[in-house]
Image 1 (cartoon, one colour):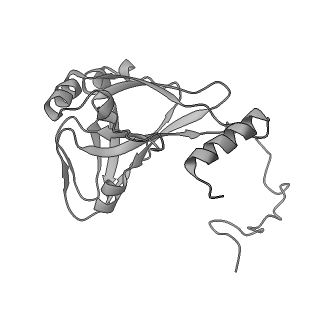
Image 2: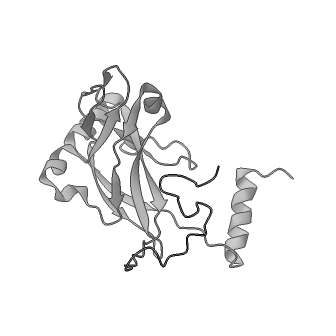
Amino acid sequence: MALTFENMEALLAALEEAGVVTMPPQASIKVVLTEEAQRLCKELGLSPEQWFGRKNVTDAGIDLRTVYPVEFQPGEVTPFYTGFNAELYSPKHFNLAYKVTTRTGTALMGLDRAADTYDQEFRSWKSPEYASHGWKCSMVNHSDEVIKFQPGDRIAQLIAVISPRLAVEVVEDFTLLDDSGIRGASSYLGSGLK
């Protein structure tokens, strides 16, 4: 039997019901579009939900559009406003981080995200700057060309990722730690493999 998306869902549901595997519930984000984004939705013939571009339940994230013209200069980090404010949430028993990632098309142009990571309690509307223009994200242009976008263009996407809590252990020094792992004793910036 071929494994399809439909029978994969059924299999995972059965495993979860049997207590073999626990699937994380859906992440949640509440949004309010700015006045400019609402105007652009009308101009572009988009519903408020279509502003975020999710067409399929299997889409990894939601699209982040710009509400203003933006030019990404070569080698520079440039912010853009998304036209919405958000409250991020995590389902019970799961710690999520929300990350801005590059869309395939913008990555092929030479754009990359500028390390935007947001905790689950992030509330963009609490910033006076964001309240009127929307959440601000940043991208870096690795190409040699100026890359331009017009209002309503999709630039990046927002995804939710499971983020285990990091436990910090303070030690006196590292001489007492086991260095027998795959990297070996001299593993600074390398695998230690020859």
